[in-house]
Length: 383
Image 1: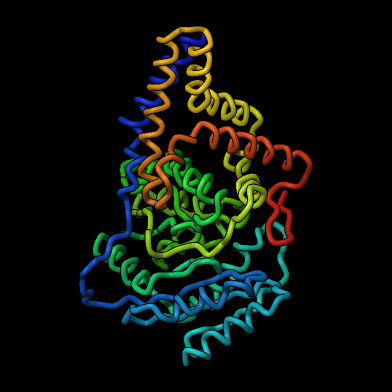
Image 2 (image 1 turned 135 degrees about the vertical axis):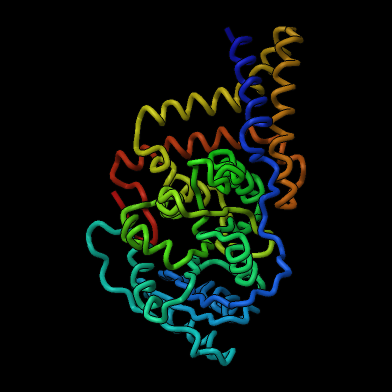
C-alpha cells in the first residue's frame, strides 16, 4: 500500500516538474527595459495605509524618487491611523521638496460589505481619477520601490500592450524563520498560479501580487471599478481574475529582485498569522477542499521522508531509494527559489518539514474561521 503511495507521489512530482508551467524556474522577472517611450503615460499611485508609521517614510521616499519622466502623483489613503502615518508621509515628501506630488486622503468609516484595504483603495482611486491618468499604480504601504520600478512597469505594459502588470516584490528574508518559510511561500504561490500560465492569454488562470500592481484605467473601469471585488480578502488575485475574465484584457505577473517588501516576519508566530489569515479563504471556506489539501500535502511532500525512514528501518532499499528520489526532485524544484532569495541550498532540503508547517497553518486558518476569528488584519476581523 505505501509503495503505491510512493509511486503516486513520484508521478505527481514528475508532472509538476515537466507539465506545470515550469513554475519552479523563477525566470518570469521584471527585467530592465531599455526603451524610450514616445508617449509617457500619466500614472497615479494609490497607497492604502493603516498605522504604518514605522515604514511609511521609506515607501513614500522610494516612490517620490522614481526616475519616471512622465506625470506621476501619489494618493495616500490614511485608513484611520492612530500613529501619525499621514504626518510622517507628508514630512518625507516635504524633506524631498516634492510635497505637491503627494496628496493625503482621509478615509471615511468602513461601510458594510467592504474590506478595509479595498475601501481605502476606492477612495484613493476616486480622488486620483479626477486627473484621468492612463494607469493606476496600486501598491502597499510597506513596499520600497527600486528607483526604476515604475519605468519598467510602464515600459512592460506599453510595449507588450498589457492591461495589468504585477510583480511579487522581494519579500524580507533575514531572520531564520524568514529564510526557512518565506521562499516556500513564494514557491507554493508559483505552484498554485504558474506565472507562465497567468501570462498566457489562452489560459484562464489569473493571479497578481497586491504589493505592486500597475493597471490601465480603462481596464479597471471595464470590470466595474474596485467595488467589483469589494469583499475579497485575497484582493490581488480577485482583481487579476476579474480583468482577465473579460476575455480581451492581458495581464502579466512576475518576480522582482529589486523592489522589496519592508514587512518583517521575525518569528514563526508572525509568519503563521500571515498565512492563517487567508489560507482558508483560498479554499473557498470548503471543509472538503481543506481535507483534500491536507491529504494532498501529505502525499506530495511527506510520503518521501516517511518512505526513507521506513525503508531504512525495514531494510527495504527499494522503498528507501524511491523516497530519496522523490526528495531529490522536490529539492531540485525548490532550489531556484532558494537561490533567488540568496539562502543556503540546505534550506531546499527542508521542504517536507516546511510543507508540514504550512499544512498546520492552513488547518489553523480554517479553525480561526469556524471560531469567527478569520481574516484578522490591523484590528479588523472579516467574517
